[in-house]
Amino acid sequence: MTEPKLRTPTRRTCERCGRVERWDAVQTTWRVAEDDGDRQVGSPYCIHEWDINGTFAPFEDEGAEA
Ligand SMILES: [Zn+2]
Image (cartoon, rainbow, N blue to C red; front, side, top):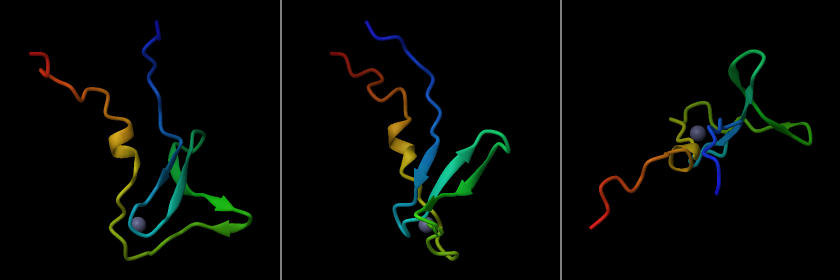
């Protein structure tokens, strides 16, 4: 049996411009992630759509039992 765990996303990616951010637990804010010294900033004009929305929805099958 698996224990239900409250998982906090620590990394998120914009599906539109490719911006990558990581969660800074100390500053309690999102920061732009860096890969090989490249800052993954994406587009400054993008209305970011983060890919964590679906992954962290805990209840999806509400009332689906027949
Ligand atoms: Zn974006």
